[in-house]
Length: 367
Image 1 (tube, rainbow, N blue to C red):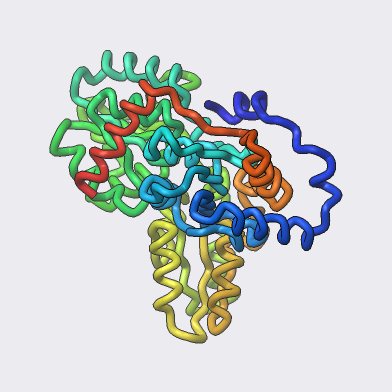
Image 2: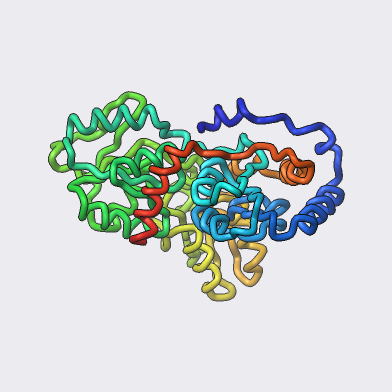
């Protein structure tokens, strides 16, 4: 489901939730959590607001939280504080007796919505006309269930930012080329780290249905879907240059969803967990500029008050769709469970779920 479809399905939050004080909402959330006990599970993504993350039973990245949800067999209700594709993955991996709810259906992901199934199937046909049966599709877990299912159907796998290198290596043992979606930056940065030159990578534009490449087609090893994270793409070379000028000796650490130029100029690049671990290990008094979502950067600064932690882009805004989840929507979701009429349930079609699980399991079997 795209974010537009989700918004069409979105129920309007009752006005009374907008009039409650923070203290009233927090007290009610605690009350409901205590009432339901282990029957209720609230996973919270690293990028969530502090007002929400304080109530999370576990925090982590999208796949970790989906796996924790699946392993939590006593949880009847999983109120996923993240975005739509994450809740889809949780629904795919959990059993039929568990209900996955998203507090606000407008909490989507612009990157995931840059690759829909119709576009992808049409692109696959056109790319096969160019390259024949020489491609294996890989998709970042930051993609819709339908795209995961597409990849699973064609013998491919999902990847995370933590295991992308290992999965790309595996993919090249299966086929001559990989078709990587929906984030071109993660695909490019991973392939480059494995020694594949930039001139062996092409970009597929799904809107023009054209391959952006000037060399010989036979030289192409990686076909990158023209998609990106709207947050991470806003970190620039100029940001790095300014930080190094303002803070000599600063450490620059970025997520691999950033552009290739930014990743190459950074001191460190890795997944969200890598960034968290690196800050945990850092020397007191050290200075860090972090190129990832603002809520996490602020939280890292609060946790590591013995270090100076800055956003690589000081004018960066938090992820707007991730921030749709707030106290009123979380309470609304929990009270709907209490009232016996859960709202905003995420339910993935069984056929889509079947093929999506194939893609996820191929990754879990190897990563």
